Length: 186
Image 1: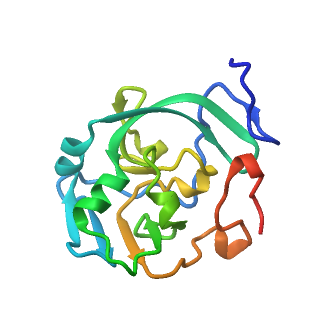
Image 2: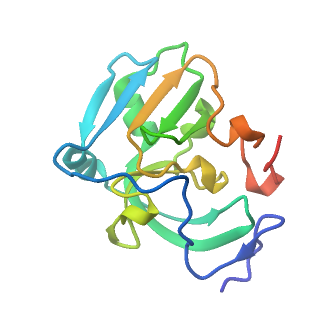
């Protein structure tokens, strides 16, 4: 266990607990896709194979849940979201990102937060393909925000001219979710 500080109100746990809204969706790798749409010059749909090919970036980051637990030094591999969005050509009207599992869960990010260089479209965790219970085959990983921003089973990214509250934001959680500022509730 590390001696470096954790964000206020957090306690370190050894392993990442499995928590999610609803049941994991059925997964069929051959029909799976990620849609990138909205305020973009070149919207597109990615296959899982394409995203795995783009997954060349490794980051080591702590993960902080708003319920008070943190896991240190998780090793994620994926594609930088900022690179994927740059290739899609952000329009000048782009201000916010909505990430969705295509079912019940979504989360909102200000575009400036989504473009941070450590935000990943993650395909692996700890050197292994991302397991279903941790959001596989693809999870948005936003290390500088509480875990509710790191959408599991990611199926759609939409860029909007304004921020639209996501699942937890509609239930009173803070729109930014910065653990160092304890931005849990609005």
